[in-house]
Image (cartoon, rainbow over all chains, first blue to last red; front, side):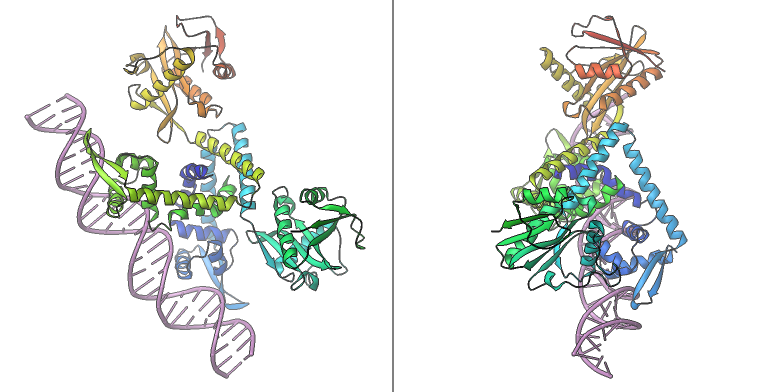
Length: 284
Length: 284
DNA sequence: GGAATTACCTGACTAAAGTCAGATACATGA
DNA sequence: TCATGTATCTGACTTTAGTCAGGTAATTCC
C-alpha cells in the first residue's frame, strides 16, 4: 500500500495541479470546488476541508467574493451563520476545474488500451470500496438522532415493513428499549451518511440484536460482520451472556453471515410475524 | 478514477502527514527520505524529487546538515559533485519516518479481514502497474547514452542467461546503424530507470527492428506493443514501407505480440545464429 | 590552454498556507 | 435578562515552498 501511495501520488497527484492553472491558489480553488459540490455554510466548508482555521477560510471566501465567484448571505434561520453559493461566474470557474481535471484524467488514460482501462477501473473501484470500508467508524448514537432515524427509515423501507404512521416528520418514534441503560444503537457512517446500523436491547432476560441493516451498495465489504462484533461486545458490556436475533428467509447473505459468526439456529422465541429464522450465540 | 482520487486522498493522503510529526517540514523530510532510499548525489536527489530548484535543495540540505542528519562530501571522481549520506542520527530519523508511515498503514488496514487486505493489495498492485505503464514516456536516445547502454546491457544479460552466451563488459560498442540518420534507438523509462528499449535500423534496403526488450516485471502491461508501434512509426519516418525482425522460439510472448501486431512469418533473411523465427510487416 | 559547461551554492525575493488573539454580532438556556 | 456560547470576521504574525539572478570551483570540449 505504501508503495502504491508513493508512485500514485507522484503520477496522479499531479491531478491536483489541475486546480492550478485556474489562476486560483490551491486552497482557494478547493473551497470553490467544495461549494460547487454542495457545501452550503462556512461551517460546512470547514468540516469538509478537514477543520481549517476559520480566519483562513474567511479570508479565502473574501477573495473569492471579490473575484465575483461566490456570494455570501446571512442565514435567515440563524443570523450568525452565512450561506455560501456560487455566482454564475463561479459556476463557470467550477465547470472549468471539472473539465480540466477530466482532461487530465483522459490524458493519463490515453496510452492504455481499452482492456487496460477497464482493469484499472475495476482495480480502483475495489480499492475504493475497501479503503472506504476500512475508514468507516461505528459510533453509538441515540436512536432519536437524525442519523439513526435515517438508517432505520432505510431499513424499514427496504424490508417492506411499515409502521402504522408515515415515515418522515415524526420519525420512528422512540423505542426506549434501544437506548441506555438497557440498550444501544449504533450507526456506521461514511462521509457523514449512514451506511449501516444495528441495535442491541434486552428481551426476556437476554440480549437481542435488532435493526441490523447494511446499505445495499456496501454489502460484501465485511461491514455487517464488523457491526455484529460491535453489537456483541455491547451486549456483553450490558451484562448478557447470550444474544438472540430473528431474521427472515429471503435475507440469505444475512443468514450466512450469522452462521459464519457462530450463531446457531433455534426455535421461534418471539411472535414477530415477519421473522422466519431465529438464532442465538453464547458470548465471551 | 477521479472519484477514487478524491476519496483516496481524503482518507489515505493523510499518510503524508506522517512526514509531519517528525519536526521536519514536508519538503525537508522528503529529501531525508530519498537519501535513505538511496539517493547519492545532490543531482540524484533533484531528479528524484521531480526537478526541484537547485538552490532550494541546497538550502534544505544545509538545514539537514545543521541538524546533524546528513553529511556531505566531495565526490572524488568529480569535484563539482557532492555525495550525500545519512548520519547515524539521520538514519534514526529515517527509521522513524518509516515506522510512522507503516503504523499509519496498519491502522488503516486493521479493520479489514485478511481476505479483504489481500484483495486491496491486489487491486492496488494492479492499479499501480497500470498507472505506471500509462505514465511511461518513450524517448529517442543515442545508443551511446548511458540509459541505452543500460537497457542493452540488460537485454544481452537476459538473452545471454537464457541462451548461454556472454557479452563482454566492454559495453556494446557503438553500432552506428542504430543511430541517425539511418536508424534510431528508443528507451522507455519509469522513474529514471529504463524499462524497455528497442531500435530500428536499415538492413538490405528495408527497416529492421532490433534490441526489443521489456523489463521482466513490466511484461503484460502492453509496453511491448506500444514500443513496437513507436518503432514502426520511426521506420516509416525513415522511409521504409516494410520492417522485418528476427526472434527466437523460446520467446513466446514476443512471438505472440508480433503476430497480434500484424507481423507475418517469413523465411530466414539473415545469418543470426540465435534467431529461429523471422517476421515482416508492411507499414502505412 | 582557454572557452564553455556543469554542479552546486548564496542572497534576495515572493506567494501560499496557516496560526493566534481578539472583536463582533447573534443565539440560547437558566 | 444576563451569562455563556457560537459563527464568523479582522489584523498581525510565522513558516513553507519555491523562484530568480548571479557566483565559484571543477570539468569537458576544441
